[in-house]
Each structure stands twice: as C-alpha cells, then as structure tokens.
Length: 583
View (cartoon, helix red, strand yellow):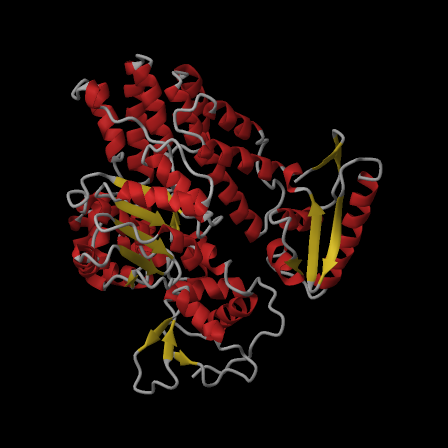
C-alpha cells in the first residue's frame, strides 16, 4: 500500500492508517461507511474506534494535501453521509490499471499476436505481496482474491505465449510461479505442454512424477484427467495429432473435487436431467449455501450431459462472489468461445449474435457464480436446442429458470464422500467415529473434503484422533481448511455481501443460538428489520423448518454457519445489536 507522487514514495503512516486508505482504494468510486471501514481495518475494534477513524482521516487528509500541493495529480478524502469517499482518478491506481489491461486482453481474439504482450504488461505491474503489512480479516481475504486474479492472468499469458511458440520463456516463468503455488493444476498443465512442444520430454516426465507424488501427499488425489492425458502423450501412448489445444481460461482456476470422487445428489441429478429434457425448460439454477457443492454438481452434470449436447460446452465465471462480470463482457467471452471474431459493441447486438450462433448448435452453457437477476437476464434463454446451467449462492428469480436448491448431504451420502477419498476399509474400521465426524461437517461437501484431505495426507492418524481435534468448537473451523478446501473463505464470500443490518442479525444469531436450535421471529425486539431474515434465507445462511404455525415460521442454522457467525461476532463492530429473545 504505497502513495507515489512524481516518483517519490510518501509515508502513509502506521498499519491501521494505511489500512483505512486501502479499504477506500478497493472501491474508490463509491463512498464507504464508517462501519464498513472499521470492519475492514479492525478485527477486534476498541470502544474508541470511531475517534481513531476520525484521527486517521485527519492525518491522511493532511498527507494527501501536502503531497499533491505541487503536483498535477489530485487525491482528497471527502465526507459523505455516514462515511467517507476518496476522490482520485482510478486510472492512477495500479490495481485498476492491471484490471484494465486484463480486460483489454480478454476482449481480443484468442490468437491475437498482441495478447501475450498485453498480459505481460499487466503482470509486470505486480510488485511483491498485495497489501503487505495489513493483517485484518478483510485484508487477508482481499489479498487472496487479488492473488487469484493474478493467477488467472498468468494462466492466460501462458496460453497466449504458447500459441506464439515462446516455449522457454513460458517454462521459466511457470517454474517460478509453481514455487509459490505448487498445487496449481492449471500451471502444471501449461509447463508440461511447454516442455513437450520444446522436445524436453525427460524434464517433463521428471516434473510429472514430482507433481504426482506431491498431489498424493498433500491432497490425497491423483492428477486430473488433462494432466494424465499429457502424461500419456509424453510416454508416447497417444497420437500427437489428437492432442487437445489448451483453451483460454474463462473460469476460476480454484480446484473442484475430482469427478471420480463425486458422490450423492442422485435426486437432484435426476430432476435436472428430466427438466432439461423438456422442450420448454432450457435453464436450470443450482443454488445453495457456501461449500454445498454447486460448482461440483455443475461439473459432474457437464460430463453426464455431453452426449445430449454434442456441439460442446461453454463455461464462464460470472464473478458473483468476487467482482460481478458485466453481462455485455460475458456475452463477449461466450462469443469468443464460439470462435466468432467480429463481435458487436452494444449489448443487444451481442445477445442477438449469441442467440443466432446457438440456434445452429446443441450446446450446454455453464454460467458459474451468478450475482443477480439483472446479470442473467441478457444471457437467458439460449434457444430450443441448447441449455444453460447456472450456479449461484443466492436465490435468484428470473421467470424463465427452474430452481434446484442443494441442501446438506444426508449421513449416508456424507459417508460415501469420505469413502470415495479415504477408502471403504479405513472408513469401515471406525464406524462410530465416522458418524460423529460427518455430523460435525454439517453435511457440507467442502467441509467433508477438507477433513478427508487432511486424513489422507496423514495415514497414521485415526478418525478418532481427527474427531478429537474437532471437539473444541472454537478450533473446529480450522479443521475445515486444508489446501484448496477452505470453508471460512467460502462463507466469507457470502457474508461479506450482506447488508449491515442483516450482518448484525447474523452475528447475533451466532452468539445466542445453541447447536441446531430452532428459533422464530416473534420475539425479535421492536424495530428489528425482519427483512434481514429474508436476506439470510436468500443467501442460504438459515433455512425454514416446517411448522404448523405458518404465521410465525421456525428457522434453523447449520452448525458450521453458527460457528462462523459466532467467531465473527467476537470481532465485529455492531452498533446497537438487536437484543433478540429467541424462541
């Protein structure tokens, strides 16, 4: 977090002061409330936090005023109702310049000769660790989202450079990148491809063997199908003429559970297959709570439905839990995947061109992580021969879509997930402990896979020992984080988008509820906005329990969600928390 004026770096003061300006720079064109600033900078705010904010703002105003006094560039902090606004040209912020270059590259044809240079320029902007020295929960999550964005840019640069034949450059850069991200499946794919095309077969095979052993030790999984295909190619068991060209990345590279270990969801799968077989139903929304397996189910269905859609699959990340993608940009990506080079500029023309292209094909379109109805409307429907699978963490309401809500896995399905990873012998040897372990995981596939991966990497551990590590509820969430599986990060992406009132209610419920306790809204204090419960329902952070008293429905919260809410409540600043008496 640096301020540079005319080539000179200006000291922005202590960590909390730098944290405040970082929180504003994340969204410089929008005002930010004092409460949001506090939540982003302080995990455990003191009683005097508002005075601290005022003091830091005064100092920052003075620093900015002095630094820009003799410069053509201006930057100032303005006061708004209930908060502050940073007035600065976004084009002067490195992060926005990086995103601008990245978006320009994505607007180009995949084979454009300038794409690699544009992406290299974007990557060159990065210097060290984002938000170094800032350690609030928000800073940690924002830092991780930026790392993911850089990772996507690196993958796209590698693809573009491979097309230009820059094999040694790609190999050198990816070897350095894999030192930081040794489990990144997509980077290994590109490195092996660079080795193969450069006739460095021995190096490629040696790299594959090291990678395979590391995947087995740390994740308990084998390399994915694309890596195995490359391995077969390196061994000379596959015709080189049938090798698949690596596509331009258009989706998140975060790993999903391997298809060969997918278990459960038989009812939902049958329902979706029946729905897509109906001529009038060409779009299905898969929704549910964080970590419940929406993207994994979509991936599984993609494989099951390939024969029904012989012209292929289009796959785009809509960025609902990161930065929501603009519908026009999404249509541009889809048209690129359809290998259409002359793309119209306005939204309506792009939609018309997209529908015209699909009218001649039988394709499945996967729109992952949708943010809102307005984002989806220009993308639906897709015509009589094709179909769309949409995933979203919130319940969306377009009229032309069939909704499937994923609930927690049953006990038997949860055990199947553990057996698929750990093996039936290991699971069967400790039946009682396995049952207790699955209850701790709340039927959430992400939590189950995190625990299973941890146990796979430690074959000397018994399941009873793992269960013992989860006996302390204050530490239990730590056990649901391992490698790419992180329940806290998954929950944060949803909770961070709640309105302040709803977030306060969520924190409060985590504080007062006991495990699996039912509650209703009757006893909430006067003045509590009951729409907060509707927002929590839409985000799948609570659920309705059938009750004969329909005027006052009962609700419940999954145990993992309660633990996360309780943990947040100990750190969050919640002004005037609702003193609910829960029934």
